[in-house]
Length: 101
Image (cartoon, rainbow, N blue to C red; front, side, top):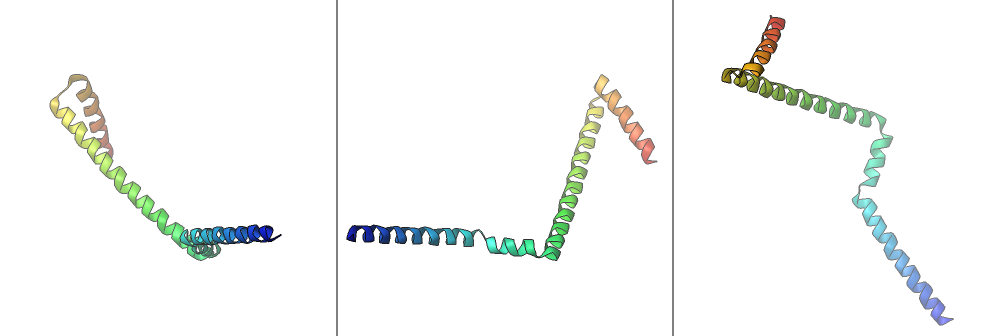
Protein backbone atom coordinates (compact mmCIF):
# COMPACT_ATOMS: atom_id res chain seq x y z
CA UNK A 1 0.00 0.00 0.00
CA UNK A 2 2.88 2.29 0.80
CA UNK A 3 4.41 1.80 -2.67
CA UNK A 4 1.10 2.79 -4.28
CA UNK A 5 1.14 6.00 -2.28
CA UNK A 6 4.76 6.66 -3.26
CA UNK A 7 3.94 6.05 -6.95
CA UNK A 8 0.96 8.40 -6.83
CA UNK A 9 3.10 11.07 -5.12
CA UNK A 10 5.69 10.70 -7.89
CA UNK A 11 2.96 10.91 -10.51
CA UNK A 12 1.54 14.03 -8.91
CA UNK A 13 4.93 15.74 -8.74
CA UNK A 14 5.63 14.76 -12.34
CA UNK A 15 2.26 16.13 -13.45
CA UNK A 16 2.86 19.31 -11.47
CA UNK A 17 6.23 19.84 -13.16
CA UNK A 18 4.66 19.26 -16.59
CA UNK A 19 1.88 21.75 -15.84
CA UNK A 20 4.46 24.33 -14.72
CA UNK A 21 6.43 23.70 -17.90
CA UNK A 22 3.33 24.20 -20.04
CA UNK A 23 2.49 27.37 -18.10
CA UNK A 24 5.91 28.84 -18.87
CA UNK A 25 5.53 27.96 -22.55
CA UNK A 26 2.08 29.58 -22.76
CA UNK A 27 3.35 32.65 -20.93
CA UNK A 28 6.42 32.84 -23.16
CA UNK A 29 4.28 32.64 -26.29
CA UNK A 30 2.34 35.71 -25.10
CA UNK A 31 -0.89 33.83 -25.57
CA UNK A 32 -2.83 36.18 -23.31
CA UNK A 33 -1.70 39.23 -25.32
CA UNK A 34 -2.83 37.48 -28.49
CA UNK A 35 -6.25 36.78 -26.99
CA UNK A 36 -6.50 40.40 -25.85
CA UNK A 37 -5.72 41.55 -29.39
CA UNK A 38 -8.35 39.28 -30.92
CA UNK A 39 -10.97 40.45 -28.44
CA UNK A 40 -10.20 44.16 -29.06
CA UNK A 41 -11.79 44.63 -32.49
CA UNK A 42 -10.90 48.30 -32.87
CA UNK A 43 -7.21 47.74 -32.12
CA UNK A 44 -7.15 44.73 -34.45
CA UNK A 45 -8.67 46.76 -37.31
CA UNK A 46 -6.28 49.67 -36.79
CA UNK A 47 -3.29 47.33 -36.65
CA UNK A 48 -4.34 45.50 -39.81
CA UNK A 49 -4.97 48.82 -41.60
CA UNK A 50 -1.50 50.10 -40.72
CA UNK A 51 0.10 46.80 -41.77
CA UNK A 52 -1.79 46.94 -45.07
CA UNK A 53 -0.57 50.48 -45.72
CA UNK A 54 3.04 49.54 -45.07
CA UNK A 55 2.81 46.47 -47.30
CA UNK A 56 1.27 48.55 -50.08
CA UNK A 57 3.92 51.24 -49.75
CA UNK A 58 6.67 48.62 -49.79
CA UNK A 59 5.25 47.02 -52.93
CA UNK A 60 4.94 50.41 -54.65
CA UNK A 61 8.55 51.29 -53.87
CA UNK A 62 9.75 47.84 -54.90
CA UNK A 63 7.88 47.86 -58.21
CA UNK A 64 9.15 51.37 -58.94
CA UNK A 65 12.75 50.36 -58.34
CA UNK A 66 12.34 47.16 -60.32
CA UNK A 67 10.74 49.01 -63.23
CA UNK A 68 13.52 51.61 -63.21
CA UNK A 69 16.17 48.88 -63.31
CA UNK A 70 14.44 47.09 -66.18
CA UNK A 71 14.11 50.34 -68.11
CA UNK A 72 17.78 51.17 -67.46
CA UNK A 73 18.94 47.78 -68.73
CA UNK A 74 16.70 48.05 -71.77
CA UNK A 75 18.30 51.39 -72.62
CA UNK A 76 21.74 49.80 -72.25
CA UNK A 77 20.75 47.03 -74.66
CA UNK A 78 19.63 49.66 -77.18
CA UNK A 79 23.01 51.39 -76.82
CA UNK A 80 24.75 48.09 -77.60
CA UNK A 81 22.73 48.09 -80.81
CA UNK A 82 21.90 44.41 -80.97
CA UNK A 83 19.88 44.07 -84.18
CA UNK A 84 16.75 42.11 -83.23
CA UNK A 85 16.49 42.96 -79.57
CA UNK A 86 17.28 46.66 -79.86
CA UNK A 87 14.70 47.22 -82.64
CA UNK A 88 12.01 45.56 -80.58
CA UNK A 89 12.96 47.46 -77.45
CA UNK A 90 13.20 50.75 -79.36
CA UNK A 91 9.62 50.24 -80.55
CA UNK A 92 8.49 49.61 -76.99
CA UNK A 93 10.32 52.72 -75.73
CA UNK A 94 8.76 54.85 -78.48
CA UNK A 95 5.29 53.57 -77.59
CA UNK A 96 5.85 54.33 -73.92
CA UNK A 97 7.14 57.82 -74.69
CA UNK A 98 4.15 58.53 -76.98
CA UNK A 99 1.77 57.43 -74.22
CA UNK A 100 3.43 59.71 -71.67
CA UNK A 101 3.11 62.82 -73.87
